[in-house]
Length: 186
Image (cartoon, rainbow, N blue to C red; front, side, top):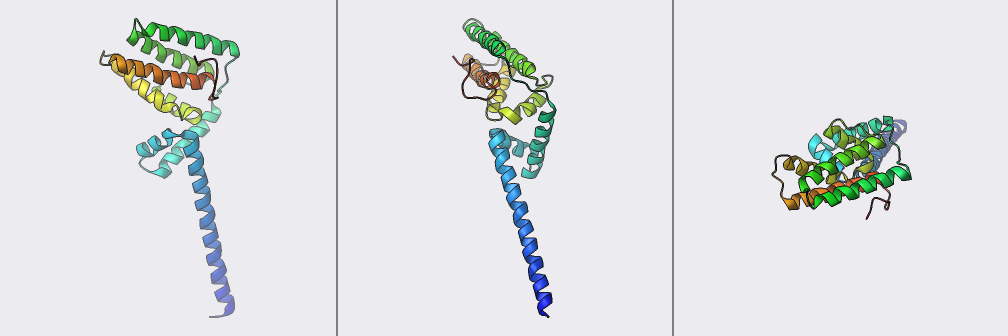
């Protein structure tokens, strides 16, 4: 074999290896970014999708859909009004735990709607919320499950109390748009 042929083979191999390295590096960066952004929802989506690639494609599609939504922050007056309504729901829990959990669900849904999230379908709500609120989404899943149990009077008082805590976590995150503090905390 001539030196030119050997050189062409070596250069070709180096280029292929470099391209593979670039693709792997970009894939790892995307995976890390998605894991950080979606938090526990990343793992849930991988489990549901059956493969990491399918899950990452799904999460990418969620990001694209989210970009098309008109998500807006609340004014300070709106935040205070919602915080006051939340305090009322919490006070209601003492006398009407199931009613308070249902009201907490309605209040969180109202807050989502006010911020610009579609609220017609729970599964779509979860997908839309996951883009900016992936770290508190586990709370919404848990609260929703308990709320569903409570509609048939199968939830214990302790479960209902837990649902209120879970709703509160998402409520605060939505109210403060993910910042660490805000008027919803008390």
